[in-house]
Length: 98
Length: 219
Length: 261
Image 1 (cartoon, rainbow over the protein chains, first blue to last red):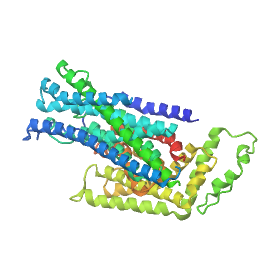
Image 2 (image 1 turned 120 degrees about the vertical axis):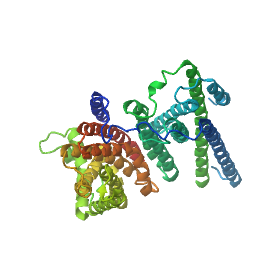
Image 3 (image 1 turned 135 degrees about the vertical axis):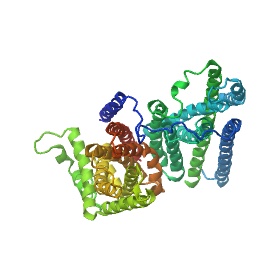
Image 4 (image 1 turned 45 degrees about the vertical axis):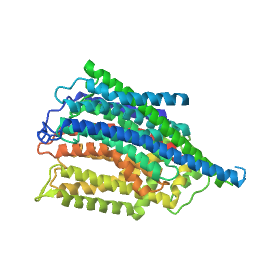
């Protein structure tokens, strides 16, 4: 039953996707409604921010995030391991059968 | 598998450290100049983000339909990495865009759909953290919707008119740019594998801890 | 099968659960096909919800009121110099639908939680997809009633020509609401037993249904332009249908494993 539903819905999904393909790229309209419309020719682009600074920030950010994540995982791991030790000791000290 | 962990980590770290040198030697792009060099890490991270979303989605499906706890661990790790790598993509992109397009952000198809996918996986993490018991299966359903977004994000830039470069940029890269780019992709995918392994290990320990607590309270 | 009697009147399900033999052998003596049974189960679930709602009309009235309040709030936010901001009508309409829809979903399933009838539904001899679709149908009918009021209101307040291309507009509304409700029903159902469910529903629902909202807004806006862009609206409508199919498929696929303990 489920397979039939799945097959039917996949077929239905293909139909509008196919129909959409037939329409070629839409010409720009007055209120610019076609698709997610980007800004045409951004003119305020004569930046004062120098490119090397942007590149440096980008790379720096990546390194910070990656190493920060590794550190975060390591910290959480050691916290969990410490807790495991505590609990294991509690089980052992209690002398009860687990 | 565990024996490979250290060599892969070392390799990933070395590649990561070497990558900037390769990038520095790559040719400059004609219209964007130096700022285009962000592309090597930004696009590579994009690919890693898709990989993370797929890992999370496939793990979630395996967990929902196969009830394997190892699949759930992969799903969590994948979702967290999608969030982290997605953050990198969403920050490095605008840093590049500010120079190349003149604006930090643009609501075009690629940027919007990437942001939406990132939000979906953040919602996954929120649900896991605050949803209480049973949230592992609920979150798995969320991850499936998130994974369904990946093809949409990828093809959005070809279907709609956007400022963002199309996917055809990659196959048509100049030889000088091709080397550093694929090197960075390999470096990030290796790095992703390392981080995934690390994070699944953490999740495994957490589950073991939970079992220990249950054993203590069970007496 | 035990008779499950609850305050919220699940008797419809309980009675049919009590007499499975009769369900299998209707008057003609020919056993029902699975499809007929499926459709009947969907209708039973939906009818139960509608009957309960018809008795108190609580969710209906509160949702309508909230949708109107939403429109009012946005009306003050987006109207400038006495003239409606272009595209504002489309956006305001869909945001109101999204917000009030989320509330309605939350309230509908909260009712299940309070009556503890969700378990009854889950152990009833109906297929999980039928349960999902029945709930979805109930929500859709509720939202249709809300939209029947909100759409003319928005048209009135924003001088928006929402009725000029009624067929396309109706198509957009139906497709958009189905997409939103399909995801919403799945998540609202699965969050019934979760913690922080009130805030979790919007947190999960909005990122996933953003594409539906975008398509709805852009399609509606295309119709509201001075020279309505019908091909554009149709393109967005087909996108909405595509989303609907994907979301419905995913929801039907995951409803059972997610709701099973």
